[in-house]
Length: 290
Image (cartoon, rainbow, N blue to C red; front, side, top):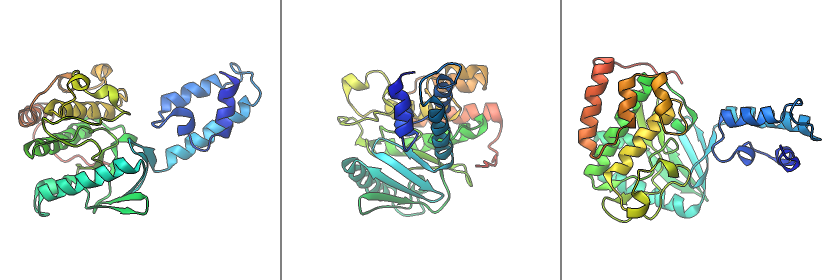
């Protein structure tokens, strides 16, 4: 532990200034151990410990996180995006495009999109008609993750049928609707027509993209299918997205599927639904209390 690190903690106003844009509990606990009086004898270490605990408690209780564009504040049925204006404009433009493709409200795929998204000053305001929770703040039981991934695959299949690759599916861009086990996709920064050149990807989840993306730089089905699997792995508790350690805890057949490569959305969805029926039986609604 360096003196400058202690000073940084004492000056911080938010835990992200200390632990980065996606603070994790393990990072917090590891740093706390480094500040323990038996380990750290630097002046101000006790005050830094108190400050770190205070900031972590505030972060744990607040409804705020950070994505590719910047800060997001959410509250039940609303999200407020602020940050990089160019990315926010792209997201809004792509939302309008997908809304037009989904058509009227009777189209089942309209449920995967927010009800509205509009600028208010420099902030992009997104609203929905049901309460939602970002996956980035959750760790869920396998039965819930299993059905949430099914919904993500449905979204991906629709996008691909419409000729688009989302290219940025991750726990920041997907929210779960506890009331229905449904999902809504809340950001569209990297969306591209299939087989066209990718111009951006998620820097925060850079290591989640499949091999070849950075050499080919082309929007393809495998990108969304890979990111969907990684998002499910994250939601089961492996925040790295790698998933191998999950075999010790969860259904091995389910984990093997999450670790396998897939290339086409509809066939992947159908195989996955067959797998769920083998593991869990006929579809049954499991109440999600969050």
